[in-house]
Length: 359
Image 1 (spheres, one colour):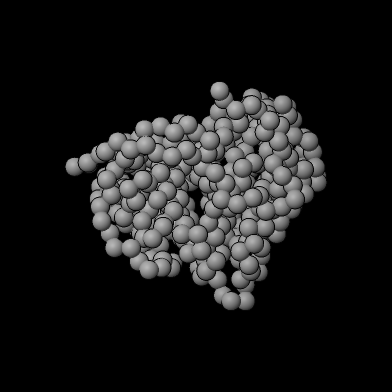
Image 2 (cartoon, rainbow, N blue to C red):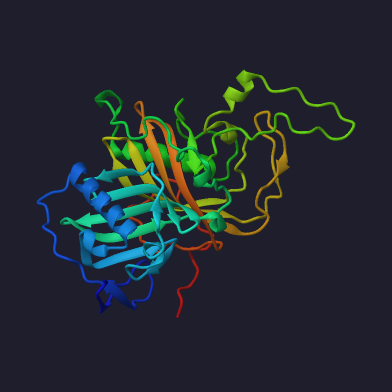
């Protein structure tokens, strides 16, 4: 049974302070320090408590702060009340320097499949911050029903611990991941980071690094069927960088409020929160690098809010990428403050940074 008290919570990301209902945290012994094993143990305790709807089964701070899908909530609420099943394939990684834990999981809410992304903040052995991104079909563009897959989408070696020879600094890992977003923003066919041969990308269960299935499509009446692509042509596009060389994502006007929240130096994993804005004004994607002009995918203002995890391996190249995306109103603002400034000389495109504050 849940016991609740009324508390006055602090201001978060500019939101007005409000009285929130909060779980009374049970007593847990705080470790002197928390390494990867310690943090990931707490991450597993969190996920287990979540699946059981039992906040007493994990070490929460009394004033734990919680959001889900870019909205501040009282704790526990949201999918804490509706989760029914773990579908497996859970990935947990951590950052002892910041006390961060990330959980990427696939769950059910009754009959609703959900691709869950979680960020936790651990201080003195207690969970002080919880941030969820929980895409379901109604929130997304790309969504693959996990109940119809033989197993959750995963890529080999994502959890592999890097050898000493392929490790780079935290700052360089963030730079490599940030270069992905620089490539994505106003994508003009230029690659602005290093994509490795292991780079594949999954978004809400769909493998977005694979070519679209156009081979074998019916030809228009009276037209000759196009030749089938060669295996070499197919393999050339079977990666996470080919679409960028064609300017396929030129409709992305901004990739803003990028926060490189967690860096697992042992596994080479970087967790990022960001927002992708589409103004909806680009009617056609220009032809670049031998590609063809084609219609833009967005004809109205719209924003993606997401968690994205990057594997940075082999001395500074992108490997597997896993993303959790939800659709939100255009230019939605973050509910969490950025943990550090953006790591490059190109600041966010500031079309609306001068909006006056609310009265």
